[in-house]
Image 1 (tube, rainbow, N blue to C red):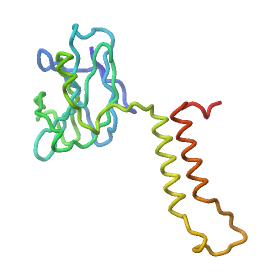
Image 2 (image 1 turned 45 degrees about the horizontal axis):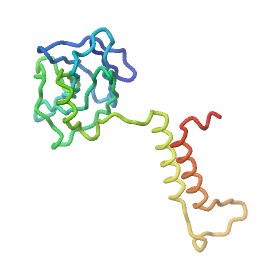
Image 3 (image 1 turned 180 degrees about the vertical axis):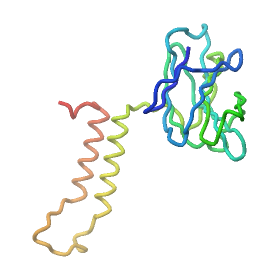
Image 4 (image 1 turned 135 degrees about the vertical axis):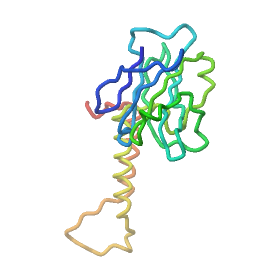
Length: 196
């Protein structure tokens, strides 16, 4: 029924049922996992009015910790979640009893709990884990633009601070800022404008 995908790894369909409505995927080497995709395989849908709460359960020195990532449902059959360190106020009671014998310091679990959709809609996922509304390319481009603008502006000098150098060309920072704002506007309007 469920699948799990970590970037750079094979798709996992080896979900283990640990209760009547609870399923887990075991993840290894979690230090190298930043995003995880959880999805319905299409073989079996959720029963009417039901969905799956998705949890990230991982070991800490204080014991197993869990955080709610979000949910999947028949009308939302997949979701990408960013895995980040959970804040203390975002910890939830672990609904999946992590198997201490099978979980090491590099292992964790993605848990799926089948629950009524109206109950899922009232739950609040950890703020750092919510699925991104932007595609990866747009996110990358925005970060790249911010990095370039911050780098260029770190060299900004007033005219009084400049030493005359006839072999050097200077671009006003306002021009770079105007280019940055125009590019951001174009990306927001059409992320594929650069292909035209």
